[in-house]
Amino acid sequence: MLNAPLDSLQTFKSWLLKKSELDSFLEEEMAWRYIKMNIDTTDESLAKRFEFFATKIEPEIGPYTHKLNQKIYQCAFLKELGPDYVIFTKTIQSAIELYREENIEIHAALSVESQEYGKLNASMYIEHQGERLTMQQASLKLKSTDRALRKAIYEKIQDRRLEDAKNLQELFDRLKAKRAELAGNCGFENYRDYMFQAMHRFDYSKQDCFDFHDAVEKNIVPIVSEFALQRKQLMELKEIRPYDYAVDPEGKQALMPFKNASELVEKSIQLFYKIDADFADCLTLMRDHGHFDLESKKGKAPGGFNYPLYESGLPFIYMNAVGSLRDLVTMMHEGGHAVHSYLTKDLPISDLKSFPSEVAELASMSMELISMDYWDLFFEDETELKRAKKEHLQSVISGLPWIALVDKFQHWMYEHPTATAEQRNTYWQEQAQKFSSSHTNWQGYEHYQKQGWLKQLHIFEVPFYYIEYGFAQLGAIAVWKNYKENPSTAIKQYKQALSLGGTRGIPEIYQTAGIQFNFDAQYVKELADFILLELDQLK
Image 1 (cartoon, one colour):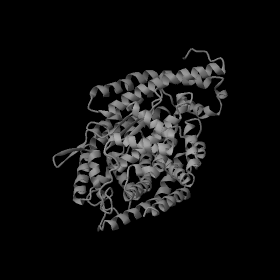
Image 2: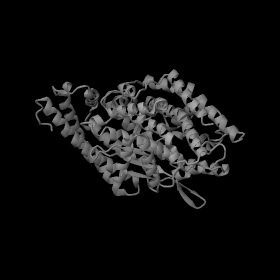
Image 3: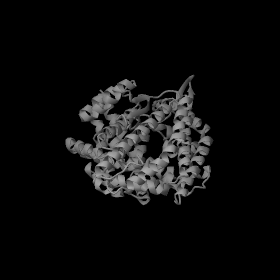
Image 4: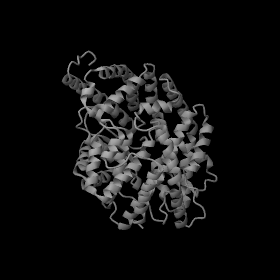
């Protein structure tokens, strides 16, 4: 590959296809090792296979990748590839600028060490009435109408997390030190500034993030506080406590839209078919090839994800489902990611199938909202259906302050790299109070609130990957608004936007989807008002 002559445009294109095949094979090999390790964290052999790839194979690949990137960037025919390759070219340039040989081992160490977070969390469980429950299974009991049970479960969950608080704080300190070294080697003042370039944030700045934080605090937090007040009144409580938010405020039992993973998959395929046949084809092929692992089980790492597999062309969905409404929404979310991968499978090279996270999350969050028109497949009872939609729409609004909080916290942490564990906890608590309902009584639980950031996987495993959810949530609301007005046009625009993959910048992809890439205060308010109108119709 390094020695091949690039003496014509056609030769260059053929060479790029060969490089793409090599990249796809290596990325998929890494993907399967990562997936299998997460499915069973108790199997040391799986962890060692992943660690071997991360520490032995990837460091050997790094220098070659850099040389191949230089060969691409210096090729006389690069500019003749056309507009589809503009973002690709900028990404290659950015990678060359950030490359440092001394960072190869640091990247490898970070890749392995960050997985310690998943292992620690996968080992967590609580005992209740002689039953051992994973944290996901235990959280389902927070939906119980028995307030004493909710309180007991909440305290057991939090106390169990606190048992590993010291380990998690120390893990973060190790990760933070390595990240600071990475950034310093590249001449950056801090890791945040390094990551903005590493994540190819070509279309917005840190100031745009700060503006989003302010817009959410000003326009969304008051709505969330009103939701809390309504909940408090419906539940006839003198005070609302942290364990009172998952339960139905009218005292109804928790919604259970499906019984097992097989039912979730089959009904999801039916649902996707009602939206678009291509969407259903994607999930059907994934099912037929065994590309789902959905149920929560002992030793399985927390979280959920869709992993694109460029070599085989079909993504893999991983979840920790226990039958809740949240699990249904997660399936719709990850299904949106899967459809996105599926719609880009025919792009010529793997680099074009890689897209900004702000676009990836637009695909997934839009699918959550669009799918609601067909949730009757999961809820035969009209009252339960309305209740499910109401819960989700409220969570869409309520999620924005959490996104802003996590992102603001990360900016602060890397701007203050010498902050101690206690200083981090104090800052988190101060900001958490700004971004949460003023009606919640945390008395006696302040020690839980202060370490609330330790439960956020992204801070440990994929730093700074979180603001994307906020920007994309606004875009998804706008896509759904268009869908309510003209379903066929909105789906056509949605598919066209996702099919672009990484061939265009974020603003142009959003424009193709029929929406704006915008996060100023006025736009945030307009979209929030639309959601509130939709909620009114569910009364």
